[in-house]
Image (tube, rainbow over the protein chains, first blue to last red):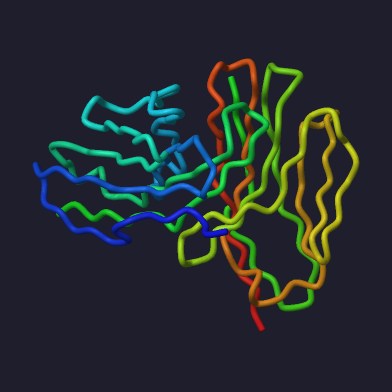
Length: 114
Length: 116
């Protein structure tokens, strides 16, 4: 079974621009979560989607948004990019919801904001 | 509030040495899950193990073993006879039911370097 895929793998943007990242979960998985990883803050939860609905959201500004499609694929969008948004963005999928479910991660998208 | 502490920022060992990575967690919940993930330089987080709060049995998988002790809120990970391929950043994570959010709370990670 194919793992979680994320596109693009690398991205360079300038301040003020917006960016959209894509995530395809493992086949059959209906929950998709997004995490931001930076050297200073570590791994932080952004949001989670299940059945096209956002279930949980982390402590990030409204510039960070996401959505999920009927095929469970998810996109996250960051508007008005800031230098501090430079990070590795990781997507994770799991079969369903519930704190006991294991999350499986994709390779991430490395975003550099200049 | 949930919190995971990995006090060891970096560890360097020589191949074939045993190494233990420490993980201490805080939670007010009685029902929770603990995880270990490995992050090689490529960036992908690779799932290693999941343990629920009611199962304190130690687990062994090949050269990997995990020691879960509720009394000390610790979930330590030992690699026996380390190999160069074990070099990576290892993350301990916690998921609990009481918070209302099934997100993973991660520790800061321990960077393990295994030298030949």
